[in-house]
Image (cartoon, rainbow over all chains, first blue to last red; front, side, top):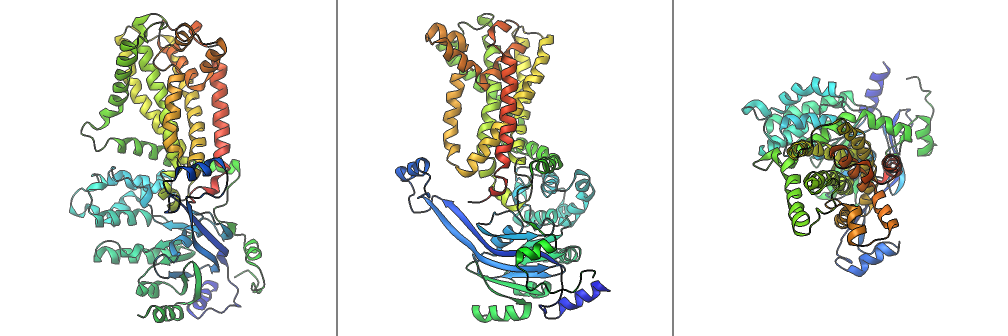
Length: 270
Length: 303
């Protein structure tokens, strides 16, 4: 009963006084990227020497302040969309929530280990699809038994073998669509407490898109809290009940989906 | 819901987090917990090292043959330069006919440490995509790379065995000494690789610098000439310099391996306290490197 009540409440506009269980808390979060070899000081040997000898602030290093003081609390059962223009810090924010980027200032508190949906970086193009499925699964923290159990499911879901035995070929021989499908299938094979999806909905052909949307809905049901980054306002409307709007690393608006998207569309002149 | 409908509004985020038992995301676990997490990822570490090894030559037509051809060609070059042109064969323990086994053992064993260091420098800085996309104890990467180099060495060992037999060195009981030597060297290399990984994560420039450091170390450890003979007879170096150079870890593991494989290479050719040195270097680098790497665990991936 409690669960049903909780869901009903979420479908309503969020009332702040309601008691809920927080799963992710971001407290005045700042993320700074440090980039070597920006235009300033590049190629200057003396600058580099200065950097090595004196422990002063490096001259050739540029700082990119990607997230500036974001504070929010996410609760169990919520699906939260992140919107904003390119480079507004959405993906960076997700990575910080996942604990993958250390914050410059502020903190992120989470319940369990949030996971970012994506294994792109662990896969190797020179290996066969088969070995990549195993490697990707292990990289996400699945046990060998879990990987073995889900192997066939992953391959079937990706549809790689629909046009012949492609799973035993190196991934570099795949078309970009096929590779994206396999990557999504591997990533979506794991259950998550706090799940974060970064524009993964837009992979593959129509048939696969439908299948992946369905899978994301399933994952949402199993997960405690879902974050979705997307430029597609329709998919945000379909999946999310709360939206955070980021611009230049700052939180512009935080509220129910309709309200925020309306304001966002007004701002961007859509 | 069992929680009382108390108002959470007045709480600061930190208090709210404490109340519901949320933990700081990306915080560094304790050392014991870290070791446990690492152990839980052992299959990933192994699979990653094998995958790297396979991917290395997958574009080449000869494929995995290069695993053994590369070190062999290296040894051939050194034989030509140092063995024939520069007369490095003089003073080879057990006589000149031992030079080839001496050289090839040296090159393979040195390459093991060299590549571990060089790949260690890039273990974090060259895999930032992976570090920023997935959650795992970061020490998995340098450890995985040094395991990759161990597997590479095992391939080379096959060639080495053929060469040894070809030069009249037949298996004896002393060959079993290779196993403890290899184990100690692996621990040493892994520790070194962890240290280099942390340094390289902060200062990627090390990747440009380290090849020179390693080459200096190669010449200073007697990979392609008998170190003691060369320093004493040819260069007239003082004995303390010989002692220092012979005590360096690369020379220690190399000499032990030669002692194990080559008949004419006797205990008299080894530096004093060689096993103690081998163990000491492994323990110091292994534990020191691991703790040093773990200390910065939460900072990898930035910048």
